[in-house]
Amino acid sequence: MSEFTLIFYDPGDTQAARLERAVSLTLTRERYTPFYTLEYSFIADDPDADINDFVSVRLMYGSTSIFYGRAASLRMTRRAGSDIISGRAFSFTKTLSTCDAVPGMMFDCTLADIIANNASMPNISLQQVSDSASYIFVKESDTVWSAIAALSVKLFEGYPFITGENTVNIKKLGGSPHSYVGDPVTEVFSGENMANAVSKIYMQGTQGTYEFSATDREAVRRGIIRERFIPLDRQWLSSPETGLKHKMYFARRGGIYTGFTYRGFKNEQLCDPVSFSHGEFSYSGEVSRLVLHADRRGIFTTVTSYKDGYSDIVIG
Figure 1 (cartoon, rainbow, N blue to C red):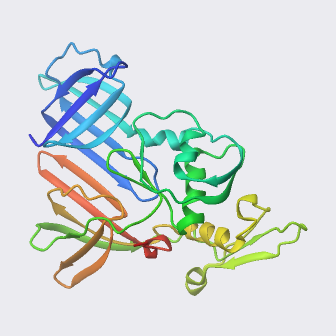
Figure 2 (figure 1 turned 135 degrees about the vertical axis):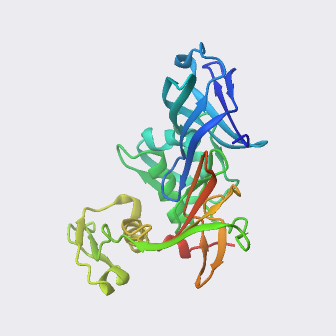
Figure 3 (figure 1 turned 90 degrees about the horizontal axis):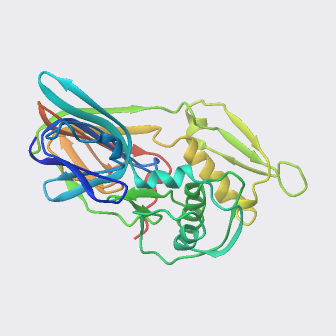
């Protein structure tokens, strides 16, 4: 697997090690997860390397950087005469989901405003979009990612997602299309998981009564009975219908899905359009979950497309 190179950096952002002999690796990108996950095992060229000083890691595919993030766990193991460095890492955008946002009202709010109003988060970049919402309300213990999600829903009725190494997107523009005609496909699959779907949700109004409600017709069609009553959410005072629809969409995110595995890797990004046909199995969708796995058998990529409320929203 000479295509992959793993580069470790120390706290001063100086290269501490460069590993070029991969044993195995798995890179996961998921539509509703605000970070990528990388699990890896590489043969160590320097068995005396101080892995305790490895704080960040980059994965290269040829000359392209496909992951850059914080080293979460590291282990050095002697196996069959070789020293193996293995571990797990999360892209830097994980900070968005672990840092609380400053509570309160933000007026004429843009994506850049949310980032500027909170803790400094290095190595994170933003989609170049200047649209602003009249306000967002950040509750106590809301994360920065929660604030970004509220902005994305208010502006575009969509959910934010990550592309590139650590780029935050709130506007879905269609992405780069991918076709897989002639690619060696090893499996195709489809399925559903509606376990978290909500059939109806009620929200209190300013008078304390549950005057706002929304029904998920797809959940009802499937015979799901799960009703929720929530207090007044100040985030949606001006648009309660939008807020309730968002909560229903998020409850059944990824509920219906289709996908395939092929040999190779095209560095697909989340929300890129895909068209796939293999025998009697064909569909058009978008990249909702991508898993790159490489080991001694070769390089394989699994592309999954969700069919849910957010997958239908494309703003051109």
